Image 1 (tube, rainbow, N blue to C red):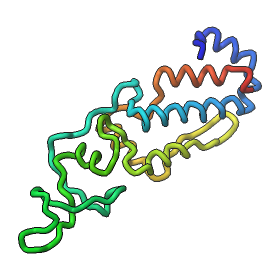
Image 2 (cartoon, helix red, strand yellow):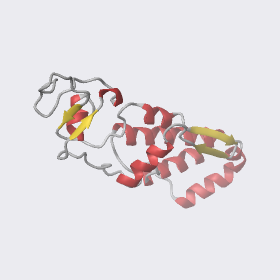
Image 3 (cartoon, rainbow, N blue to C red):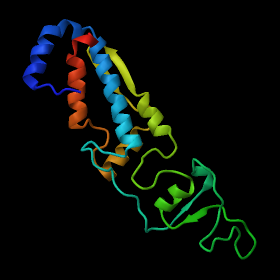
Image 4 (cartoon, helix red, strand yellow):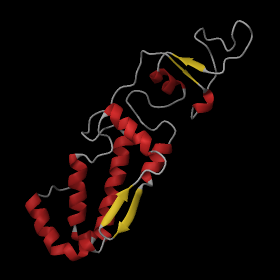
Length: 178
């Protein structure tokens, strides 16, 4: 995609301001950039600086209830046994770390991929709402708290990157989208 300078953008937008205000180019820009953000966040595991979101804990052991997991697994204790010495079955599974748990259920674990169950990704992909011709909102209906918690832990994830901002402006100013 060709790069446009700020001066060129202002000149182009000035020529097309009525078309931009009609909402068509704004809608195309919002939807296009939201799709790019989704790919960056959920497929590539990148934050709003285009850096890796982070690394998974690979040292602290955890117990996971299979009912809370997006994919079932065998419930085993630290020894690998499915039952205790008294014969009772384990209700949780022991994993050496969260990274190991993700690997055990077939999820990406070489980089932080915040798409464990698919719910946050689905919520994000359907989060854009048109308010008016000149205003769109992005509202997570089910995972607002989850996204805030992830950003508290890992930093800015859901903000636009510099490239996404430029892409948004270029799509907005493109007369073919009016």
